Length: 349
Image (cartoon, rainbow, N blue to C red; front, side, top):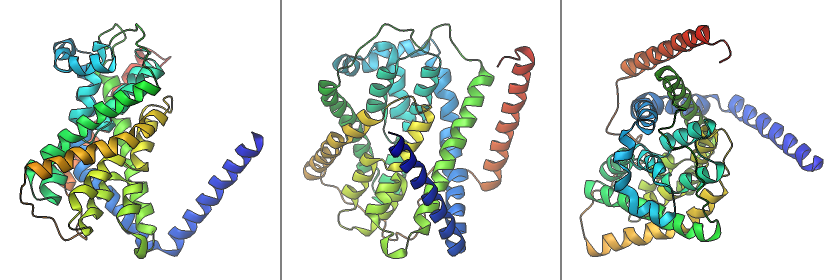
């Protein structure tokens, strides 16, 4: 065991030195990678994720979450998930996997759910949000909103079926715990602090993986590598695989990429095993592709594939650079002031 730990430490150190060497050897590519990552943060991630981080936490501890339990009751009954946890599914399916992982991690910290429950909830709620699948992939890449809508629905079907299959191997234990409306609620300053921290977390991973991809030799900057690293990069590079662009984009969405798994692990404070989620993707991918193929087979539609893969992937919801920067700095200032106020009231925080 000590040998393995030492080997891990050495490998991490060597990898860090190699990365530093690449940055010094190819400074222009490194600068472009960081710039592209930051551009994606202030044009897409901050305006699309930051509000949902706040909304998700407010919604999960609100009595309104009980009114939505009946919407997903057939699904949660099939997966043997307590109905009190339906809000996590809605968060992931509407706001995306980052918001869901952040909410699950927050509830895990407050001991509202167990690690076993968190692993199952991650498996079923980890999905790309509709703004990305329908807007960025369906409209911008595939040139058809209808195809994006069905790809989004196929993704949710695959999440449910793959989680059900995983439940056969990893039975879900529905412990009787506090639901999300328990007395362990968070104040708005705490929710805002958590939202800012989660947003910075996601932005950091996006910038880092964009940097890694940009430092790669141009000969291997292709769809398989991009799909392995980051979901958005994979969808962007899928435009070079005509006429298989729809299936390449669907594969990128299903596999998520190392960046997404790193974000989920960090947002759940590294307390949840990602092996169930990783294993479920072995079932998720063929189910998603099968459903999507059936749609294309029986509902023929014309597509205008986005042919220029050198352009940057742009989501339909975005903010101007200066507005996004001012908005985020304001949020940080409010967060810091609220945290200072909380500290004065309770120095133990």
